[in-house]
Amino acid sequence: MEKAILDRLTTLGHAQRMAVFRLLVRRYPDQVPAGEIGRALDLKPSTLSVYLSALTAAGLIVQHRKGTSLMYRADMGGAEDLIEYLFQGCCNSRPDLCLTRTGSQKSEKYNVLFICTGNSARSIFAEAILTTVAGDRFNVYSAGTKPASTLNPVAVKMLDAKGHDISNLRAKHIAEFQTETAPVMDFVFTVCDQAANEDCPAWTGQPITAHWGLPDPVKATGSEAERYLAFQQAYGILKNRLSLFTALRPETLERAVLQARVDEISLEGKSL
Image 1 (cartoon, helix red, strand yellow):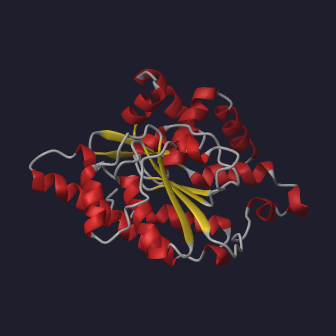
Image 2 (tube, rainbow, N blue to C red):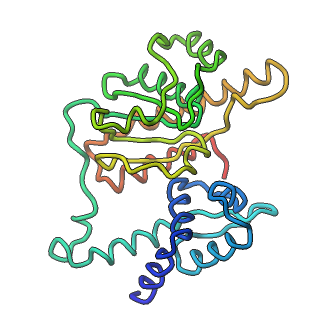
């Protein structure tokens, strides 16, 4: 075991290999095509292939074939073994006590942030839905890494038709939630692949994070009815995921269990 751990540390000691691993952790439990990883990190295919092979051999990522494509996913078991080994002597040789905390036992609302690139449709859907169904338990926000100047009109029209309060919805930059006076987040979810691929600064308070990616309805093509259906499908997937999320009771769950549950929710509406 010690040799395997040292091999993992050596592998992650290279900045670009670490960048590949961190991207796949942010996208977990997604399987990500090699080409998408290369584009996100601006790596040549030959260089990326060497990094992926090293990470796979070290037990940090796993490879699957889907049709003609090679797909990669972070091996969270391997990562957890590495972290546990590093903290093996802490807490009277109970690293689980150091690394896993119970639910936050909050008496006030939890703060939740949804992130996508444009903050004009998907993250706005999530903000509106969660506010409507569980606004008594959650303060809900959304933001974009490159926000549009205005919200998508189809998204706004759909939310209004479904009875959501749209009066306070607006496109916001992620930087608005990274200031010293910003609310401390308990949960941060990315809902588009491009935003998840970006290496954002660490969040204050170490929130539970997950990637709930889904297709961008704004980019849908075809007839007006086909484009509207794309918005309807995105709304439906997010509503189902948020129904599962609101059924959780964070105050009763250990952090590791809670993280696993929100990761599992990402599979709702997605065929891997």
